[in-house]
Length: 108
Image (cartoon, rainbow, N blue to C red):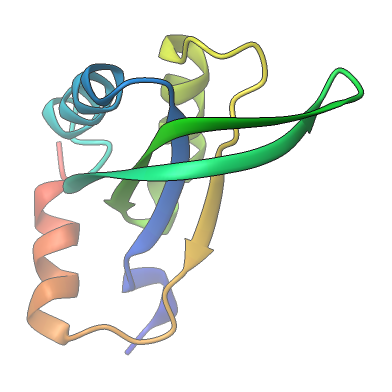
Protein backbone atom coordinates (compact mmCIF):
# COMPACT_ATOMS: atom_id res chain seq x y z
CA UNK A 1 0.00 0.00 0.00
CA UNK A 2 1.23 3.49 -0.88
CA UNK A 3 2.32 5.25 2.35
CA UNK A 4 0.75 8.53 1.20
CA UNK A 5 -2.61 6.72 1.41
CA UNK A 6 -2.05 5.40 4.94
CA UNK A 7 -3.81 7.26 7.76
CA UNK A 8 -1.79 9.69 9.85
CA UNK A 9 -2.51 9.81 13.60
CA UNK A 10 -2.35 13.33 15.04
CA UNK A 11 -2.31 13.75 18.81
CA UNK A 12 -2.84 16.68 21.16
CA UNK A 13 -3.95 17.06 24.79
CA UNK A 14 -6.53 19.29 26.44
CA UNK A 15 -7.55 20.14 29.99
CA UNK A 16 -11.18 18.99 29.79
CA UNK A 17 -13.23 16.32 28.02
CA UNK A 18 -15.51 19.05 26.67
CA UNK A 19 -12.58 20.93 25.09
CA UNK A 20 -11.29 17.72 23.50
CA UNK A 21 -14.71 16.69 22.17
CA UNK A 22 -15.45 20.18 20.83
CA UNK A 23 -12.10 20.46 19.08
CA UNK A 24 -12.31 16.91 17.72
CA UNK A 25 -15.83 17.43 16.41
CA UNK A 26 -14.80 20.67 14.70
CA UNK A 27 -11.88 18.97 12.94
CA UNK A 28 -14.16 16.15 11.72
CA UNK A 29 -16.84 18.62 10.59
CA UNK A 30 -14.19 20.57 8.65
CA UNK A 31 -13.03 17.27 7.06
CA UNK A 32 -9.51 17.77 8.40
CA UNK A 33 -9.94 14.48 10.27
CA UNK A 34 -12.03 11.38 9.59
CA UNK A 35 -12.31 10.46 13.26
CA UNK A 36 -11.58 11.93 16.68
CA UNK A 37 -11.08 9.84 19.81
CA UNK A 38 -10.87 11.22 23.34
CA UNK A 39 -9.33 9.39 26.28
CA UNK A 40 -8.52 10.41 29.85
CA UNK A 41 -4.81 10.41 30.73
CA UNK A 42 -2.49 11.52 33.52
CA UNK A 43 0.37 13.76 32.40
CA UNK A 44 3.67 14.53 34.13
CA UNK A 45 5.69 17.29 32.46
CA UNK A 46 8.11 20.14 33.06
CA UNK A 47 6.67 23.63 32.68
CA UNK A 48 8.33 26.91 33.73
CA UNK A 49 11.11 24.99 35.52
CA UNK A 50 8.69 22.99 37.66
CA UNK A 51 7.51 19.40 37.34
CA UNK A 52 3.72 19.40 37.00
CA UNK A 53 1.16 16.59 37.13
CA UNK A 54 -2.37 16.96 35.76
CA UNK A 55 -5.30 14.99 34.49
CA UNK A 56 -5.75 15.70 30.79
CA UNK A 57 -7.62 14.36 27.79
CA UNK A 58 -5.80 12.99 24.76
CA UNK A 59 -7.36 13.87 21.42
CA UNK A 60 -6.36 11.41 18.69
CA UNK A 61 -7.29 12.48 15.17
CA UNK A 62 -7.13 10.22 12.12
CA UNK A 63 -6.34 12.04 8.90
CA UNK A 64 -4.33 11.74 5.71
CA UNK A 65 -0.72 12.93 5.46
CA UNK A 66 -1.55 15.63 2.90
CA UNK A 67 -3.81 17.35 5.45
CA UNK A 68 -1.30 17.52 8.31
CA UNK A 69 -0.28 21.17 7.78
CA UNK A 70 -3.90 22.37 7.60
CA UNK A 71 -4.91 20.24 10.61
CA UNK A 72 -1.95 21.48 12.67
CA UNK A 73 -2.77 25.11 11.80
CA UNK A 74 -6.44 24.62 12.75
CA UNK A 75 -5.47 22.97 16.04
CA UNK A 76 -3.01 25.75 16.90
CA UNK A 77 -5.64 28.37 16.06
CA UNK A 78 -8.33 26.80 18.28
CA UNK A 79 -6.21 25.28 21.07
CA UNK A 80 -6.51 26.90 24.53
CA UNK A 81 -2.96 25.99 25.67
CA UNK A 82 -0.09 28.47 25.44
CA UNK A 83 2.12 25.72 23.97
CA UNK A 84 -0.03 22.83 22.73
CA UNK A 85 1.56 19.47 22.07
CA UNK A 86 0.65 18.63 18.49
CA UNK A 87 2.43 15.71 16.89
CA UNK A 88 1.85 13.08 14.25
CA UNK A 89 2.43 9.35 14.26
CA UNK A 90 2.87 7.68 10.90
CA UNK A 91 0.90 4.53 10.20
CA UNK A 92 3.06 1.74 8.83
CA UNK A 93 0.21 -0.53 7.81
CA UNK A 94 -3.57 -0.26 7.75
CA UNK A 95 -6.44 -2.39 6.59
CA UNK A 96 -7.15 -1.21 3.02
CA UNK A 97 -10.88 -0.53 3.41
CA UNK A 98 -10.26 1.48 6.60
CA UNK A 99 -7.50 3.52 4.94
CA UNK A 100 -9.87 4.22 2.05
CA UNK A 101 -12.56 5.36 4.52
CA UNK A 102 -10.12 7.84 6.08
CA UNK A 103 -9.29 9.17 2.60
CA UNK A 104 -12.97 9.45 1.62
CA UNK A 105 -13.96 11.06 4.92
CA UNK A 106 -11.40 13.84 4.57
CA UNK A 107 -12.21 14.80 0.97
CA UNK A 108 -13.84 18.20 0.48
